[in-house]
Amino acid sequence: MGNENLFNKTTEQVSSYRHLEKMSTEEMVKSINTEDATVAGAVRKELASVIALIDALTEKLSKGGRLFYVGAGTSGRLGILDASEWAPTFGVPETLVNGLIAGGAAALRVGIEDAEDSYETGWHDLQRYNVSDRDFVIGIAASGTTPYVAGALKQCRDHHISTGCIVCNPGSPVALYADYPIEVIVGPEFVTGSTRMKSGTAQKMVLNMISTSVMIKLGRVHDNRMVHMKINNEKLIERGTKMFMEKAGISNYEEAKSLLLKYGSVHIALNNMKT
Image 1 (cartoon, one colour):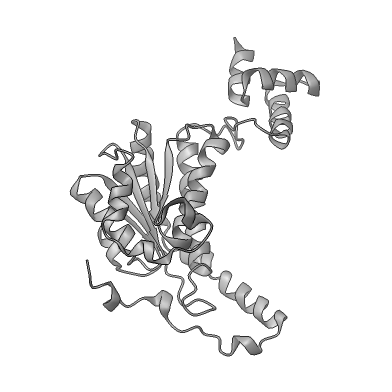
Image 2 (cartoon, helix red, strand yellow; image 1 turned 45 degrees about the vertical axis):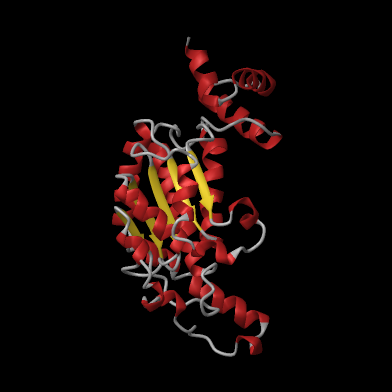
């Protein structure tokens, strides 16, 4: 660690577009859309790495481990976004997946850019959760050089904690400390160096694959339905009731709704129908 400034970052290469301020709105939007259209292809090239991470993470969680995302800036916010969606979508404990961001909760609302410059803070943040070799830690850093992330993953490796990463530069320092590196190379951004654009989109696509696939493998989806989702607002009550009606063969909406609210999830309601 310490030579990150010498690392050649494709994410920092000069944009293929010049004089953006002279573009019309149509030119800007079409150019951004053209660049965004390349992201799925870049992700596709890394599917083997994504699969390897998913399988390793599934094994850890199936044995009682937890998942931690560690990131800074946009990358950290994307990790927290994904972490926050496992519990309501799949009905798992809120402590199963945890998102850590350099600078803490305040960094979700405002940029605290210098918070990422410490190699020690990421590991200290993980220690507050008593992270252990039962757990799995994924570092998210578009550049692949963020000290907060690199330091955390290095300490995890030293403590025999399984690690992965989602980065957008090849051969980065962060990837060197990851047992399961995912390197999605999206190339220069529309606005030079603005990695909240294609890089952020790529990271979100990979995070969707990870969270969804792991939960399916652990039995939290039946057929193609979120039968374990938490029923905690009117939209989800309606969705859950219709799902329950279909699965249980009930034609009366109010009857199905009453049973769903009684048991709290489609999965539990269906199990009670069988007894």
